[in-house]
Structures are given as C-alpha cells and as structure tokens.
Amino acid sequence: MKKFLTHSLRFATVGILFFILLMILYVSLDPFKVLYDYDRFVADNAKAYIALNRDYVSTTTFDNNYKKEHYNSFIFGNSRSIFYEVDDWYQHIGNNNSAYHFDASSESLYALNKKIKYIDTKGVSFDNALLIVDEGLLEMGNQKQGSLYNISPQLLDNKNLFSFHFTNFKTFCAPNFFIPATYYQLTGNVFPFFKNALDYRQRVYNPKTNEVKFSKFEIMIDNGEFYTNDRIKAFYKRSSKNTYANAVIGKSQELLLQEIYDIFKKQGTNYKIIINPLYDQIKINGDDLNYLNTVFGKTNVFDFSGINRFTQDYNNYYDWSHYRPHVAKDLMKIIYAD
Image (cartoon, rainbow, N blue to C red; front, side, top):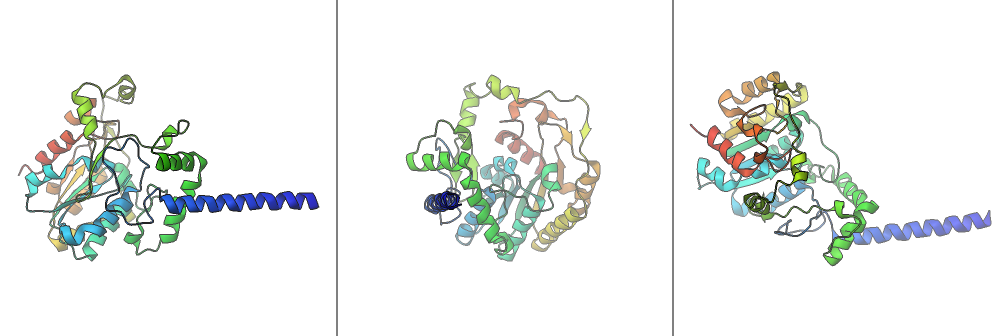
C-alpha cells in the first residue's frame, strides 16, 4: 500500500507539473490570440498559420476600429463571404462608404443575429448590408461549439467568457495540437510529424476591413499550377437533375430572421441577401426561399443555389466549398443591376 501511494503521489505530481507547464505555454504563446490585444491577427503571406476563431477576430477587430473607421456597411456570412471584396462592393454602394467584413467560420444564423444586434447597440450606422447565406448557415439557430466556432464573449455580454476560454485551453492541451503549435511559434518551423495541425494557405489580410485574400491562389491559377490532380479529385460528379434541400427554417430561425429585418427596417438599411452557388448544386428548399422572400422582400433575395452557370464549372471554385472572388464580383453585378 505504501509503494502504491508513493507511485500515485509521484504520478499526481508529474501530472500537476505538466498541467502547469501547459498553462505557462498557453498564457505565454496565446496561440489563439484571445488573451492579449493585437493590432492585426493575421500576418501577410506567412508560410503556416494556427487557425483562429474567425468570429472572435471579426468582433474584436470591429471593437478596436469602429470608432475611428466609422463603418456603415457590412458583409456577413460564413467563410464563403470573405471573397466578396470590399473594392468590388464599393462600385455598387459608392466609395463614400466604410465597409467591414463581419464573417465567421461556419457561421450560424444565431451568431449572425447577435452580430447585427451588437452593431445596432453600438449606435453604428447601418446603411448597407450584404448577407451571404446558405442552408448550413440558416439551419443553425443555436450556438456552435468548438475553439474555432464559439461565439465571441462580447456578443453575449461576456456570459460565456469562462466556457470560451476553457474550450480554447482544452483544445491547446491536445498533444496533436500543442506540440506542433508550440514548436512552430517558438522556432518558425513546421514540426515534421504534425503537419496537418497548421493551415498553409497563404493569404493577405487588411485589418481595416477585416478582409482576407488568397492572392497566391489566383496567381497559381493564372499560371496553370493550382488545379492539380489531387485538387480536381475533390470536384466530384453531381446529378444532372435538380436536387432540393430539406426545409431548415423553423420557429427559432424565423424569430432570428425577423429580428434582423426589424433592425434593417429601423436603420433604413439597403440590404441584399445572396444564397450561395455551392458546388453540390443542391437547391434551397422552396419553403425556406418563400419565407426569406416574405420577410425581406423578393427584390432583396437572390437565389444562386442549384444548377446554373456558376455551379457548373469547377474553375469557379478553390475547393468544393468555396467559390472564387470573380464569381462574387459577378453576383454583385447581378443583384445591384437596378
């Protein structure tokens, strides 16, 4: 029994010391950039990145800048919305506006609603809004969990502050994360056995507009280097017949959408809603589309889902999930044609 207690005590001591070491590393390195203030969250064209919570990046950058930048125009949506470039949008709403990307990874309707309410409570003018939505976004009427997807504490009056930070720390503690993340942050090199833990997509970031551009991808496409055999494999064969999604707008979604409309109406916002042209070519459910048309007005809702000239060609996509900026530019020309 004495030997057992001795071994148990040693094991517990090692565990406590290891936990303390993890805490020190986490607080020192701040891998998710949620503990300290940053002028910018993304370095231009870094060779690798630790994936950040885009919801937190967007909200915190807005907090830091909205008073001096006087934002009055906002682009909302999931990661597909980042390819709607601000300079292209200005051609339709005017260069006298100050635009901001208020997106999040795997954005939920719940979090989008909170962002719009948050802007409104700050007394910020809401002159223009562009909502980029799809079935996946509309379906999520509740919070999404995970270090990359947790809603920013600011949007909930810090009611989720503890769970937000605890989730981040728990994610960091996983061996397949803290080993490569720590190694990369300390050395600037990629740990050879954990290459999949980092994001290698080079990008350019504008902290004023919170806009991300994958300029290197476009250069590779122009040079015929992007669509390799491995990338083309991701563009699977689709049905030649129309396929419709199940209805996803229920009572909770209806309430969230109505609240968004009420703020737009109060602010006199010039808003447009784009339903994404996704590679899967699945058409939005008719009942969901009718509801959006009823609430926001048919002249403000534009459905590009399903089979069309944008979804037919894989050259319009970086991958099966994200379409390229030239597609977003064409869609804006269509919706602002009047």
